[in-house]
Image 1 (cartoon, rainbow, N blue to C red):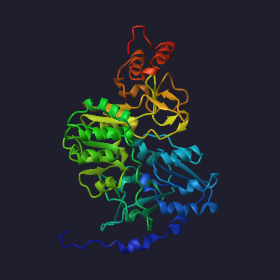
Image 2: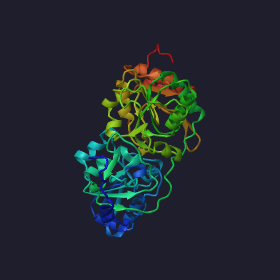
Image 3: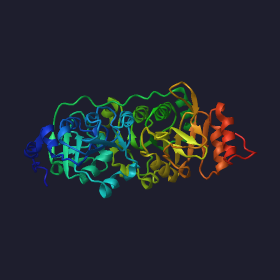
Image 4: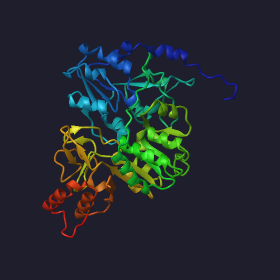
Length: 452
């Protein structure tokens, strides 16, 4: 094609497929599986329209995840679940509350298999997804929802896109867009400003844990940071440190990376793959974060089948993964998604990055937690527990690398049961160490020569 060739005009096709939310959701039938994709990809206008059809529909199942701001109307409008049943791959704080009310069901998963679940095992009758406005070439950008959107739309029988004028347009490695020719219906309408993730201000304990981890990070390391105050504390300390030429390879891009970038620490120059580009799957954070990812050639969104694939992560030298957990037992098992049987979040990418970072040359994988927590009555409890009884195990003891609290960092790789117990008790709160020793002795995983 010469430089003078005219571009195809997609406006006629756009007008033909443009409809109202109420008209679009008429394609949903009783018994259907409907997908809302993830976080800012949730189709707010279509969700409201589908909820308005409650009394004429039965047994419609909906999937979503990490939808940080409610309401999800189809879940809220039907306490009986006779009409709508909502499911989440990874619970936000809002979806956790839905679970507590019996209005949401969790789907166990690991994120690097997300695309395969849809390709081989799941039915999607209708997908409804928010996208950025169409470009001149006929493409709608999945924006900060790129990590999960494309595999779902490829599986769906019917694709409805909801144009959200506020979504940033991101550059991607692949699958960051869908062409109008693959779309069945388009809806438009005014949207509220993008949801902003609550700022997790690091506590003094968070900062102590981050300070314990910082010596393990070298110049040129590539970082994966999970969600919450602990990763934010690491980001803040790195921004204040002398570390240089750090990289980003993470399922979730948060404001911690923006802080490192603004401090001149995040350059991606030393990466062996995707050199010069920060890689992420989804982004959730502040308006400044969304401005940063918009039209930025220095960062690239990829599907999570790439971002979270352990074999991809392993190719990155000095890969450092930093995630949080709820508790750990003396055997080294990690619970990061539940408290007892109560669902809090999800497996997400913790296990993916534990495996991948452990296989990286110079790589390290950290699981972090405060040594204690207080319950609703103000009673203090140890996060290091004798043995789990009913908690969901997120990461098995065989995969745990470094564990960190405000009292230190221990390495669990290749350690025996007594070595694990000794190490864990050494980073427990001093008030609980003697009781933990007695529990370890009772379980015959404590040597008389042990010291902590």
